[in-house]
Amino acid sequence: MSKYFKAIKSYEDLKNQYKNLLKANHPDNGGDLEVMKEINVEYDALFTVWKNKKEVETGEEIKETADSTRTQFYTMFGWEGSNHDWNRSLKEVAQIVRTYVKEKYPTYKFSVRTSYASMCQELHVTLKESPVEIYKTFEELDNDDFWEISKRLFMWGYNDENRINFLNASAEEKKKTIEESNSKYAHILNDVTKAVIEDVDAFVKSYNYEDCDGMIDYFDVDFYYFGCCQDNGAGIKIVPKTARIKNKKASVKTSSKKEEQPQPEQIEAKTNGISYKITQGEDTRDGSELWLVRINETLTREQYLAENKAMKDRGGYYSKFRHAFIFRIDPTEILKGEKTA
Image 1 (cartoon, rainbow, N blue to C red):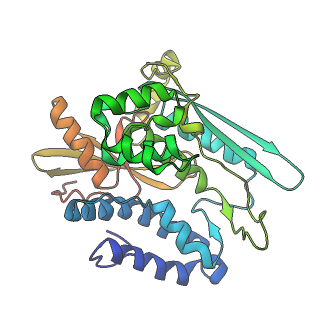
Image 2: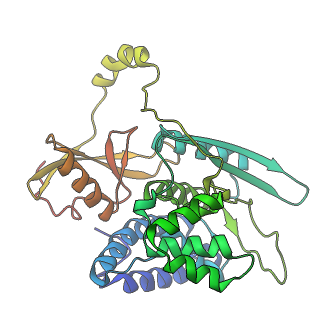
């Protein structure tokens, strides 16, 4: 149950409610910082649900993200991420980011470092290794992808004729043009890689503040951040691997102590023939509330893929570290299940 958003009717209604809540509760406008943090957590979770609903209804892909709309709405007050804190040093932010990428993406490798100059500080997060291919295969490219490639390959000369010829060419001719170009910009990142990049970038930006004005001040920012994937992923190495559990022996030795500790209350929920175990927990990075959802049944590959997509539509994501789906708001009602203690 949402605490701040009431009777949402549509994707546009969600954004309008958020804008009004922002005006009333932003700290720069006399609001409470903790309340604003709670609103942002709810907005992030609900945004995914209502965005997906609109995409299904209209059949159109929505390019907006919760972070991009938040940036738009913060303009009149100065943009401040939901986790930003002026008392937190850049080194502390860097450590939080390191923990996040290691926990959520254990099979990927990121470089996280800081740099400082007289008038600014920068946080550099770079995706170095991926366990899977990062680009779409030629067969996976669609018309929008070919249009994007045409802009990249012919942008410097603004040669519309070459661009049109490329778009009208046969599949074999397009493939030959792409291969002969030998350009890193002739490749399109696949959905898996884009999702990882967008998630990490959004997480980093949630710890930043920015109120730069191109006409007045370029430096009103807590730290500069340029994204975790530069040059269209040209420097990313493909290193297939699976997640490993570190300090396995230590975990065995301490398991008996963990069993003696009181266990958090668990709620059972069931929907569409699948039952879940919901446990309230805590984010180890900032102490905020989260909920862990685990599936009781053993699913087939097809069932798991369908359920994984359904969880994303509901606003959750799978954590290999936790072996559970993570939600930022109580998902019991979202799952529309029958609750039993």
